[in-house]
Image 1 (cartoon, helix red, strand yellow):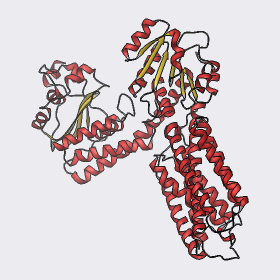
Image 2: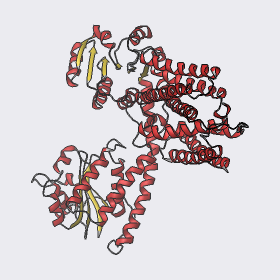
Image 3: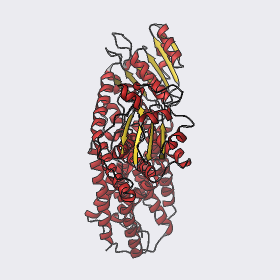
Image 4: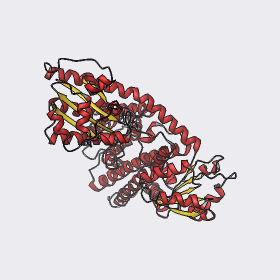
Length: 261
Length: 360
């Protein structure tokens, strides 16, 4: 039953992507709340799935890579719904839906939903550490989306090939301001996640810590480069996209909550 | 019962005529005396129109008399500036007006606000009834639909407005931005005026002939800079408009790149409208520099114009659909009153005064 909820949710995200592709290819870009509604419906089903899975495993449902990816897709959808309207980035849905779809499709298709043989007692701090870190990933994902939007808009301005979407995308400074704020928010959450990881009472997995710190340093360097004005806005946007790809790869190395015992 | 619109606009009358028939404090009362049951008076800088619902037809000259500002008699030539739309044609015209299709700059949205204000004023005077209330409400809906479903209100169709659109995408808010014009030609003046209209207030003009630079600077409340010193000003400039007759390239990467290093966060928008070009094309390869020459600006303007033309048909289709819907709605609720339901035949020629009719 829970997987069926997820499949239905994926269909909603797919519908949002189809609409995005049609909108982007059209000579005339038409705004519509369709993408937002589809993402909201997909998000509602993800929430139901995570709630059912949480009850089944008796803890925050991030006990294997499958659940982590679904939790990440849920975080991205959540941050989009919180951030998109606030920054008046209504087009963000057009760029967010494909990302959520990719993450969720991979989670569904790959044989990664393996139940853990060893049952451990729930650890509140460990769950806080894991969930806050994944939400930070969600924020970085949105920074990546805003970065992609910036690059698209900037490229149109450079090449003089103005598609219909040009007139609907926000000005470069608006996009850049969204990127910067998302980076700071993501960085703060990620830092909280990283620090809380040392206080879980579990043995410290040093390999994982090194990778997590590497990602922290990467985002910190982007912010520092920005703070010192040594990176141009375009470079920051491109780095946001690249850094998120690197951060995603870290997920492979994560030792899941259930493995900690 | 008849629904009709009588008026004149930039399409049919010069500004002097529009001023003469702009309406006055007694216009509404006079129109009511002549039989207008419901009445909306729309006066903007480009049009003066009355939308009226009456038991019987009002003659155009009668309406002109009510709108006339001074006492002089309306001439036949002035009367011929008036148009008249009846029943479904009146609805079609109103929907075209609210959607900006009848505007001087097709697709502009200011007219919607002006129509809304005219309606609100009529409503406050209790001049609207079931017909004009429905007409106006539907007109506002049509305008919204046309705006969202077509690109008619988007994009610019002149070099100056394309430059402004691009500048807004590069800088966001244009207020406080600094513009330097090299070479005070006609196109650069138009572009400068367009930028100034969107809030750019820090305008600098440099020209080989200092007199012309000073003239333009004075006209736009800017500052003239000696041509020998333009490069010093360049360091703080956000938008650089170049239109000198120089045969060598004035703006090269070697010249601009060191300046950009001093201001990593500030993009530079270069509008090169000179032929031969003043800026080296390689300038566009620099990070943070957006170079547009006259050809690229014109080609964007042309593309937008073509798109707008295509969107015109789509907008007219939406309007036609709403005209039918509106007329069906009116016929359904007020059917007996609206016995004559003629199909659209366009503007009706204004009726002349009996005396003028005999004379002609």
